[in-house]
Length: 470
Image (tube, rainbow, N blue to C red; front, top):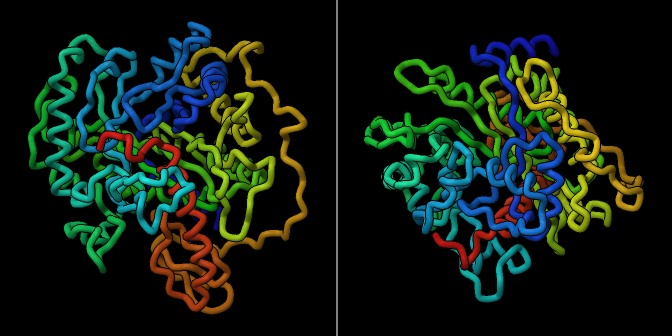
C-alpha cells in the first residue's frame, strides 16, 4: 500500500525541475508584535510574508535596518477585494509578486450575521459583507473575470511599474476544491443556494482566457496567462488531507504547471495552511508530516510544482475553542508560529523553521548560507514550553482515498467529503466538510465547527472588517 501511494504521487508530479521550496508566513500579527517579524527575518528561512493587504502596516522604526530591509523586500502585497489600491507604494518595496483576490470561492462569514458573532473580530456595530473577498459578485467566476481584467490592467498602468522589480501576479487564492461541483452563477446570499464554489478557479480560467490583459511585464496576453502562480489554502486535521488537495489542484491545472497547450508555466502556492487544533503536540507532528523530505513538501521530486508554502500564523481570541475542547494556557496562541509577548518561536514554529532550514541549507537549494548562531531563533523558555496533559488516546482515522467510497468503522461509507461514523473524513479539498450523510452527523458537525472557527479567526484577525476598503 505504501509503495502504491508513492507510485501514485510520482505519477501525479509534473516534470518540473526540483527547486527550493520557499517558506513564508501569512499573518497580520506583526503589527502588534514587531519582535515576531524580527524573529522571522533573523531565522534566515522566511523568503516571503504577507498580511492580506498591499501595505506593510508594521512600525519597524525600532528594528535593525538590516531586518527592515529584508522585511520590505520579502513582503508580498495582496489586492484583497475589488477596491483598487489607493497608492502604489508596494511597487517600490523590492518584491517581484503581487497577489489577487482572497477566497472569492466561498460566501461568508459576515459581521452582523449569524455566522460571525461578536468576539471573532466584529465590533458591536460592525458590518462586513459576506465572502472573503468582500463582494458576493466575485462568487460568480464570470463576473470575477471582468473585475480581474480591471485589476490587472490597472496594475500594468501604474507608472512605478516601469522601474519596479514587481513583474508577476498570483491568481485569486482558493479555499475550496478544484473540482467543478457547484453552480456558482447564482447569488449565494439567496436561500437554498450554494455558499461554496468548488471548481471556481477552473470556471475563472475559462472566462479569463477570453479576455485581454496587459501583463505586468508589459506584454499583452489573455487575462489567464498573465498569472504566474496559483495560490490555495488548506485547513485540515491531517497533513495527508493537505497533500491530497495539492495533488488535486495539480491534476486539474497540469497544463498550466507544465506550460503546455499554449499556457504559460505557473507554479502552485500553499499560502494558508494549519491544522484544526490548538493541541501543541499535534501541531508539531502535523508540521513533520507536512514538511518532511520523504513524502512531504520538501520532497521536491513529488512537489516540484509547489513553489511557496506559508503557515497561517494567528493568535487565538478569548472565546476560541474547538468543538468541546478548550485550549490550555500553553496553547493560547493557537496556530501562531510566535509567542505573542516575546516573539520567540512556539514549538511548532521551531519545527517549521527546522524543516525550512533543512532545505535552505542543502547544497542543491541555491540558498543563502546558514544564519549565524547569534541570529538563530531563541529556544522556547521552560515556562512557555507545552506541558503534558492526560488526554484520551486518539483513534486512527479511516484510510479514505480522494473520490473513493470505502468502508468506514461502524456503519456507512466515506466518499467525497462525507464523514465516517468515527468523525474522520475522506481527504477532501473542501474546508467546510459539507454534505455529511452518515447516521452520526454530530461527529462531522464537530469537525465542521473546528474548521469553521479557524476560518472565523482568519477573517476576524485579518482586518477584514468594517474599516477595510472593499
